[in-house]
Length: 489
Image (cartoon, rainbow, N blue to C red; front, side):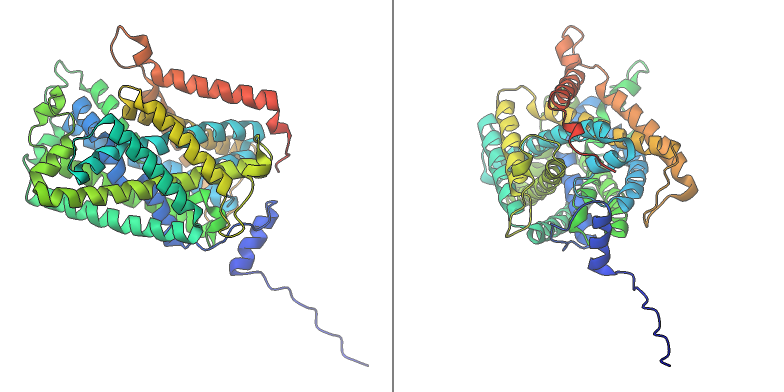
């Protein structure tokens, strides 16, 4: 009698097979090229956050509005955003799906809530693309030795968006390599420039960082600081982009939560360091506050680096702007693709296509470039275009973030427990509540009416824009009934 054959033991899938099986369990087949490492995923998030671009873009606004103490906004916002990143880390570890916020919210709170969160987020990212590209114009002018003009700034912005689209179309490997190159250039440039300014070109003592420079005369400095804190809120996001490319990242359940935390640790610290170095290097703080010096960054560059060093610094800054654009466009294109894959947007049959050669969502990338280019052209005819763009994109991103945090809290109240490889354990509910409270307070600060008392449209422009975007989204969703087209488990 033959001995019984031993039972065949199934071996758990590992590596690429495990990533593929996890994606299939969530209802999707492998379509992207999964070639991005943890470090490259972090570099994508870091270049999206981009301390150089963010600080340099709004430095003049921050100092003029809140004086030197505005630098403390980076620390406050960094802590608050770390709470949000921890919540996102739990979610993406369980749902590592391309598109980030939209598929996460779908599984936590349902397709209607997710559709609106993604809609607000998408328009915020389109606007961010335009704002970052627009902010690069003056630095190209410096590099070329010309005075910045509105036309030059607009043409530069359009050229950068076109270049970013071309690089993104080359594929995930190219995106990852350029993101890593941008990260290296930006972090080295930030450290070298910051240290040089602190050691050689410092015009003030560190005591100035707690001096309101007369802005708070009469004991009313807090409103000015809250207004100036936009510089911090505009800087400390981008970590969510790590999750937007979840299907292109190896071992995403572990790699992405780690990359998100690293983005906040390194990005917020670098932003604060750059801001402090720049404040201490401003030759005349009073001139910035009074409006006599409208571009203190250019003033610092000419004063500190002269005719030879200034173009070099400007070139490094432009590299940072380009890598920033690449990361943002990659994020929004995956978001659009995720909508189209679920048949939740008009034109899904086109926008859900991937390039057969590079395996990236080419139509979605093209759409993001076209929309950003349109916003840039409108900005040419708009006064204070950069500040207006930055204000809306910051408000939109924070609102969509908190819609996901609220969805997580809702799911937890109904018994959902994070089952990914990164969890917060018993601290999860408390961290989620704190993240939501921080986010709601920040949104209220962003939307708070400011500006000339006699001009309501300048005081409520951000809130009005948000209301218009939400209203259009509700109308679009209701008329097309897109949220009924796919049942998401």
